[in-house]
Image (cartoon, rainbow, N blue to C red; front, side, top):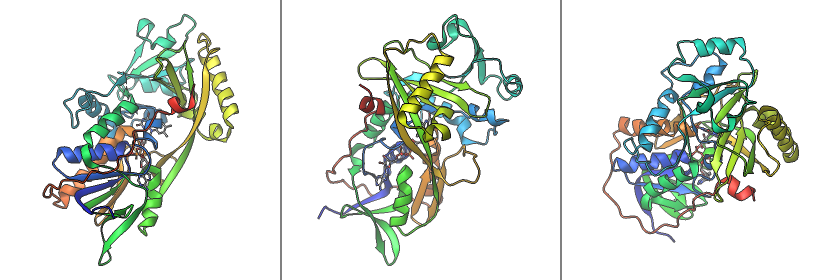
Length: 391
Ligand code: FAD
């Protein structure tokens, strides 16, 4: 029987939310244990596009939703962390792009023209031309307009690796999680037969939260999954591109991010509308054909004859919502010692950690006496999908 452990905060699920929270708590002197059943970041986090949104994309729905939304402050907080002087030291994390771009292949629809001219976007969104264009769009055949958004793109695998370093000795590879009850009250969890007591228990297991809640006999909060069918293309002729290509509707027609493969080539990772409903319904071969057609229409000068293609199905996990609106804040629900949530975006991991820290402060939870942890089995760091799926 493995030894029992006591810790201040026990976290289940080591995606960006659990890892970021864990690092913040440790920095404030709390003891933590972070349990992961598969690989660090291997749920949605390393499959994400790494864009640190500041909310500009959502302005395409209409007006910007206002400064009260946490998302507006995320680019600044990440920038400070990446510079090594923020809430975490992420100076070893690779920044892929200083900016994300909005790219309109034709003339702008009337509502967008007024959007770009509006006070809300001035200073946040600037039009770029010529040599300032993203390298992949620098071709004399390119017609259209490009706007630079003050939003970063981070290399998520290097982020996860850094957050795993900051987790110190607190990572635990564990499969079976059961409630640990005392007089009917939750006091911790039993993880693979090991008892772990904690002042607070946080579930940040992404799509795994629903099952964990039911193992604890709870039905709230409810979760929704939003399936996506992403496309990856790797080739020697690809140049960096980080952009939402605008279509007629409120969602980007296609969102392209570019990621370094281990062999030195670039991988374009395609999301946006192409990866949603119709794309989800397509078989992989048809989804690749649709992406080839889109890129052929939008970027006819890019030679894709040597490219390798693959698709990836992945669900976004979020709190259940009515309608189609997406929250621009992290979500956290509480029940006595238990806290459960979803950051809803990688960019909002700092907001998720804030919400947990605020709940601890409100309840007067302080770091307890330091305990030395026994040596624990460690989960591996996830591999990026393009290393697994592309030659
Ligand atoms: P996850 O990363 O899914 O981590 C949950 C972890 O919990 C996993 O490691 C899992 O193995 C573990 N787990 C599950 N069950 C258990 C259990 N029972 N016991 C122990 N561990 C368990 N957001 C952005 O801000 N910008 C983007 O550009 C962006 N692009 C995206 C693109 C795609 C294709 C997708 C799918 C999402 C994207 N997102 C983006 C959203 C973002 O990826 C997620 O909101 C974020 O990664 C969620 O982090 P998480 O830690 O909650 O979940």
